[in-house]
Image 1 (cartoon, rainbow, N blue to C red):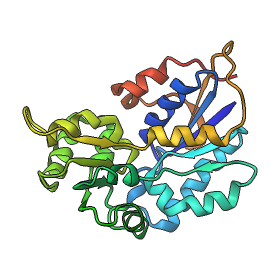
Image 2 (image 1 turned 120 degrees about the vertical axis):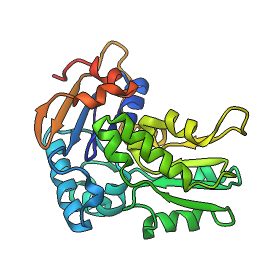
Image 3 (image 1 turned 60 degrees about the vertical axis):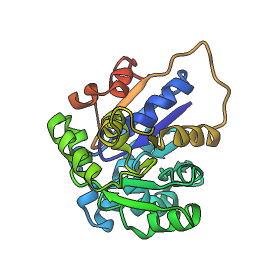
Image 4 (image 1 turned 30 degrees about the horizontal axis):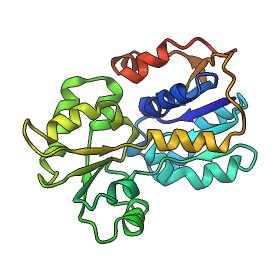
Length: 259
């Protein structure tokens, strides 16, 4: 089994790490676009073009499924990706975890990139799954970029700015960008101090990984250890240094090359 994941950068690490834990026999292929990231600043047409190129590079390695491990790319490019590759290659998008977050009754905050915040796509999910729940959309400019660069000071500044825009009574936060899951502990610390009520964070990595495995037939091979292939703007390479600042990146860095 081979599962490909795509993103502009290292936002694909959380879902890849979950897949590694669930199916250590599976080969993983990580296809990103360091020459073109961040995608969130691009027009929908340009973003879709770049997403298709990253997906084509992954598809050339004949994976059994393709995970679009990026909320912004899912918003803007998922229809084009599915039209290009399905039904031969299942394409799994990343949906903000608004539905499970809303089951607690709220109030809920959704942290997302400016490109996703306020989009018709996100507003549609809120209307469908969080009707009657108090929801605050919180744009987080610069946070995904800071995570991508491994810039701890910039991460802390962007998290603090987003926390200041988040109502204190919020009990649940949806991490609406896959990059944010890499700094979930920092987000939690910024929103909750000692003695304050607990905060629930909802990422999408677990659900996306589970959906990918549902779309791929196959029994786990307990005798096999899967490998890792990294594509950087279509060329085979290694995980970028910034990836190793995060637990998910360090986990995957220990995986041997796929053959």
